[in-house]
Length: 367
Ligand SMILES: Nc1nc2c(ncn2[C@@H]2O[C@H](COP(=O)(O)OP(=O)(O)OP(=O)(O)O)[C@@H](O)[C@H]2O)c(=O)[nH]1
Ligand SMILES: [Mg+2]
Image 1 (cartoon, rainbow, N blue to C red):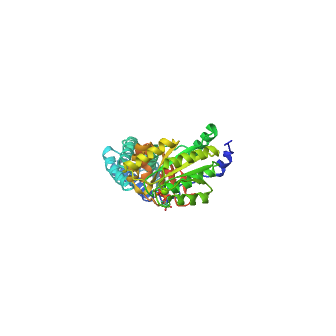
Image 2 (cartoon, rainbow, N blue to C red; image 1 turned 120 degrees about the vertical axis):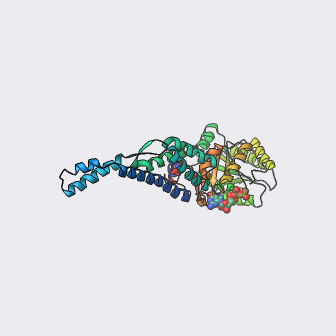
Image 3 (cartoon, helix red, strand yellow; image 1 turned 90 degrees about the horizontal axis):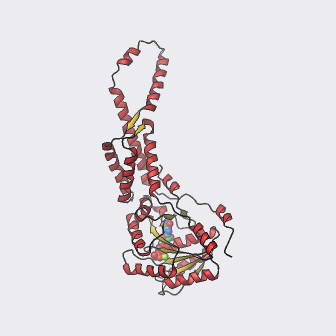
């Protein structure tokens, strides 16, 4: 019987906010950008006020009021006026502002298509709309926040899917990891194994990288540290058969989940991508995850697209988010590939893996 008391683990395990410098630059610059629009609009309202004829004001001077009362009345009226002044952003003005926003986004690794999409949506939401002067900045921030949240694809709960399959079908759930050399696949396999164990899920790892020197030893070391069995063959052997063996081991031992590590391969190396196809054919993974470095910007998007064309990806892990100060890749990779980001790698320790949460992620942008 594979069933375990998962709920207790659910309560014990806390998904944390990504602990990273992500959006360090974009956050401040977006704030400057929205404040600038708000400032421009305030100045415009003030200028228009100055231009108005003052005839009525002259007349009202005849009413005798104590100086302090006059002062009070002015500030009170001023405050009311301030609150009710309405402003509009015209098409032409938006063109100027949107060019600035586009540059900002592109500089921070947001893909071209994604920045275009953000700007088009923002145009729809704010151009020619009447805003209270006081609220311009908040309204633009809010619109941006909603647009970005919509662009990100809602991730599914990997642990839940594993539990469902292993409990209902009494079969191990198989996860395949792929990506280019050094992107963080093996580290992510170990982190996910540890994460699933924390949730009460039993795991076995297949050492599917039979190519790179010391890759099997590297994985065995992780296995010892996190207490997970590693299934391995010799160097140079067929990675598909390592995966197949690990799946059989899991079936025999009622293990809930099999994680298959693979050798790094460039997304441009067609013959190596073909090898991935064979692993998929033999092991029939339930989940195919692309592991990419957040710091590489648009390159990660190109890689994800190439792996998706060959193996058909289901989700993405973006590693090294802890050293990615721009953050644009995470914003765009899902949109371009239409695959959800499932986890962010945020460091070199096992616990440095974060379930991707759209709302928390957008908070990091300071919107
Ligand atoms: N800062 C940081 N480093 C990471 C993260 N994930 C992996 N690394 C580091 O990246 C380096 C490469 O990680 P591996 O897991 O060996 O990468 P790989 O994709 O398996 O590499 P190959 O098997 O050679 O293709 C190691 O030094 C890891 O510690 C992360 O989220 N943050
Ligand atoms: Mg590796």
